[in-house]
Image (cartoon, rainbow, N blue to C red; front, side):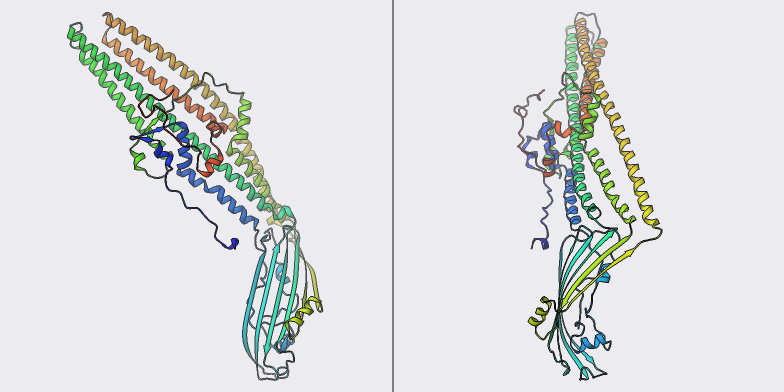
Length: 580
């Protein structure tokens, strides 16, 4: 019964996973990079939509493996009052042209319908079993009563027809039909009444030239299998892009968080200097007019801190949207605390450009999809190459019939082949100019060549992009190292200026300028760290290595589940500074 039952389709998941709430404590969402990626895999709504594509490709492949129906007459048509040729009075009159009936499968039957199949439509590979049973009561006036010997001929008929047909991957079809005609009529001239007329017929036909062979009749299945691979690679591409996007959002939030910390340190320095200035004014070391100038610097740093805090809040919202699928009041009010910091290794140790390009060519899912599409283009070329050929169909069939007053005797005649019949034939059709098929083939081949050139162009562009991204990573490292040196220098200059100020050899203006220079250097270091993190993520994404680097698998993406529970790192919820 399985083929006739609806497949089980699981319901849509509309709730966030418990991992999200496990990481929230006292209104704070403590988030590591690993947890952010796990939450995105489990909860991202865009990824959930893409998760259906491989499943759809699987079902489409199953549909293609069933083949397509061939045109032709079906054996299960309704046959009211149908009798065999010569069966009873009505069958005799029909065969003599003295009456018209609705059925009557006297000779070779429907083989002429079977040879109408042309083109490259593939056969149906699922065997089809059909049965038609018809009961009828027909009254027919008899203007000529020589045969029927009655003015009104009453026929009670039963027609049982069972048929099974199977398409062949070679381009043909086999069909077996069993028909049984029962007749009971009121004619005194019918000496076998009631009568049974069983018939068993086997038919086979095979296309040659156009539509012949495995290559022509399985190209859609081969393309469907490729589409399953392409759907998986497309999903992997979506998963990779999502992971890269989450990493960018996470490091953007980390940079914003570090900017807030830098602004807080700058405010502390300005506030301490303001307090020191007020103490010096109280002691009479400085004039009172210096206090407003120190206060102004404190106000300026407070404003800078407020701006940094606003940018930090703005950086949280995109990350929240990426790691959740539905509105969650607990998440909406929570503040994200990024636990991981940007870790810049001592060196990048990038391999040569040739190795980077080779890794991208084998690892990037979008390039895998492009290769599969090129393969499908070559496979689909069968659809324009094969129709160039003329159409030819060879067909043959045989049937055995019986006629008796009892079913057993009639079936015995069939099994003994007392009345065998056979037929065979060939059907040919060929367009003389064939311009339509020639044009389709020419267009298809030109498009294949155009696609090959486009693919090579894309590969060349990818190689150039990788080279540019590698340079960008090196520049980001150089900028980071320069920012560290600039920050250390400004710290020394501020300290020197403060020492001079304590001895009365400097002014508040110089101190303020030195503080501002240090704040700018600290902000520059924060920005340089963020630039390096984004450059590293972009290079991994361009190489197709994002999932590998972050220990994510395609199976996790397809299932929407990442193994292992998430816990808040020790000390994070207690207010300890995030780990380095």
